[in-house]
Image 1 (spheres, rainbow over the protein chains, first blue to last red):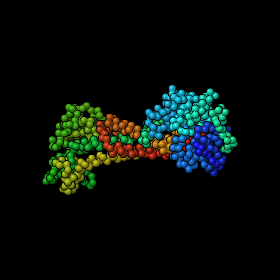
Image 2: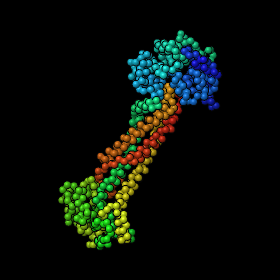
Image 3: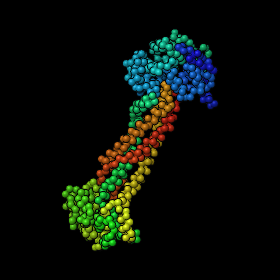
Image 4: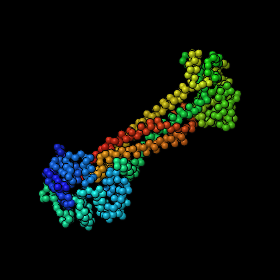
Length: 226
Length: 393
């Protein structure tokens, strides 16, 4: 049974309004556990929308989306959040790290609503930051660290709940070649550790990376090569 | 688990308030100022009532005044004989109580003429005088601190010149001054013996303005007052409780009027709080979206906003009440004294001891904290339902 299964998925924004936009049309994808997949397409092609549906941020307008064995279409918001918390780690294009918190506090944020006590939160976050060679920046305010370090902080935050699926939206858009290669190495290592990685990008450095086993092309909301 | 989660959210709320300390501080300062005003009024009125209770201890339980055509007039001393036989009356002491307007200073003084030796607790008067003063003998007078200051007199030995109704001068030697702690009742007082006050106001022999009745058992005051009223139908019988009630009503009316102004201020602040809470800046919206995308639920964001509101309003409440207490206890409620006490140009200089009562604290709390929480709950809800995809795009 695939870890991610989308069947006839359609997503329409501003439905029945004059500014209605069809972002995805009849998407059919199956992704097995432990795969490393790249969603490739130009800006506005629909790859971020597809990533959001896989990431349980919103359900599709129609069609069936089952993530980690659970159909999303009729899942209430509350359970969608819990499902996302347990199964998905997100890495954003602009990192979405809160600039006024320290790196350590940012990484530990997903554990707060789980009731994890501060000491345990700190310990978990610290071990991830050390794994990503960011331990020396743990107590720095996020606004004082570089773009590459911000991204590693974002990776640590995505991993803190030990989710089986890691999603990254244009993860190398703000990085130079060296940092981008470093990011892909971390992703490859995570895949080796059993995580399922889905990257949305049009960066050749990602699409041509040897660890990426499959590329799904998206254009105007449709899959054109799978 | 749930408790630990709430602790974590509370911790995050505290951190957030500290991060936005300028905005938080601004709200706390304004809110505290509003609470300070409301609490000061409440504490001041309570302290004034306590002070009146304390200062009225030595006053007669019942005062009898003669009425004619609905107005007060002098009462004949032979009315005392008519009270004989009423069980429970300890003593009846004649008194002259009048007002003297000084055109030079435009001040009204309260002139009291008494025969201290006949008062059951006349000795207590000594305790109300500053050191070196003594009860006035013939041709002498005791004055309140307000009179002393308005007329710029020394503590004793000065001469006080007052005009009789026929504009002839009556000179009195100042034998001393009342202690400032009794200012609420004595600040504008000139106390002298009965014959001197009769002379000053040109009241005929055998007449006084009122009769002071002291009773043996304070529990019987109402019964005795009723009996006096029955026996002297042309008089007004005023028990001490009624005098207290008059003071309470005066303070209550003035305080109530001021409270309306303060409630308006509180309402204005609540509108301000609503406006501040509604107008989330893009960074705050983004923060909520990020929290939601990494697994915080709508209920968690609502809890966060609730804690923020509760911390801000409780902190303001504590700060406002503490400042109000200090203002009343150590500064004699200087900001509101002109509104709540005194008249004419003489204001009592009072040392207030605010009595903190749970009901007062609860009243102030319920006037400010729940309205603030209610005003911020809808904006909090609007903030909590920001979709997580706002962080993605």
